[in-house]
Image 1 (cartoon, rainbow, N blue to C red):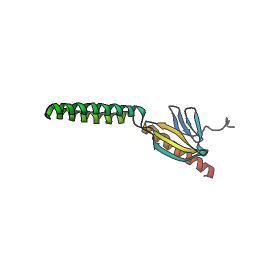
Image 2: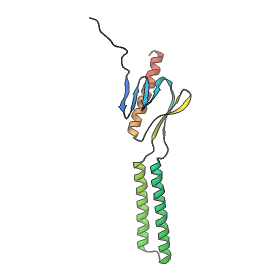
Image 3: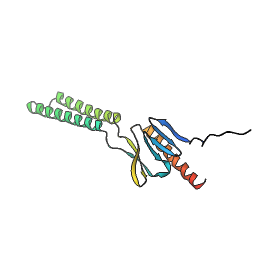
Image 4: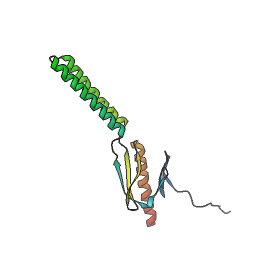
Length: 154
């Protein structure tokens, strides 16, 4: 009995499609961009810049802290330093610290995956979700390893 085959077998997938990103043994596909695995050199994960929203939140927090500090200084000049002023100052400091911490968790910098492609440094993938970023990064490393092993004939 003859076995019928149709075309080449489908490429091994190292990362299944998630938000438009796929890694197989031949390509890294991110949205509408496609990068040949064999052309990726100097793969480098990096932290991206601070998000714009986080910068804006830090600006608002700083302005609010300045306003409260000026108001407390004015009240302290009018009256002697009292327990109420100290309480307001401590509550302000705690609230500012909490807001900065919450903002950093809510708007973390993106992780970025860079590589040299055809002689140019290229941003391949960027994601704020560190778990998904690590999955893609590991998949690309596996795909590069398989491509190099296949090239050597192993």
